[in-house]
Length: 124
Image (cartoon, rainbow, N blue to C red; front, top):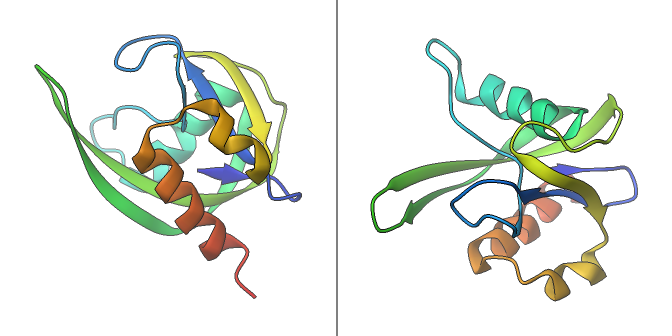
């Protein structure tokens, strides 16, 4: 997940299943021959218009749905540039302050990894 220099986290409203219409972290599929890290940065840019620098791996999560099993690798990142816009699989993209997160109804794993990433990126 990506933070701006004010400590706000970047989220997207998912345009497609699973979790369509919900706020989530940007992400997507790895293309053939692409590293996980490169895929994370590419998907971030495609869904939000933002460029970032990775700061570390935060978590690996199994998301198991009725017909699919996704493996999610969460990275912490800091915004380095770009222009915020919803693109690709996102219907909206926005930065949220820590105080706004609980009102969004995020998946509990998403809230957990945001907290872990905040500690990684903003550690003293």
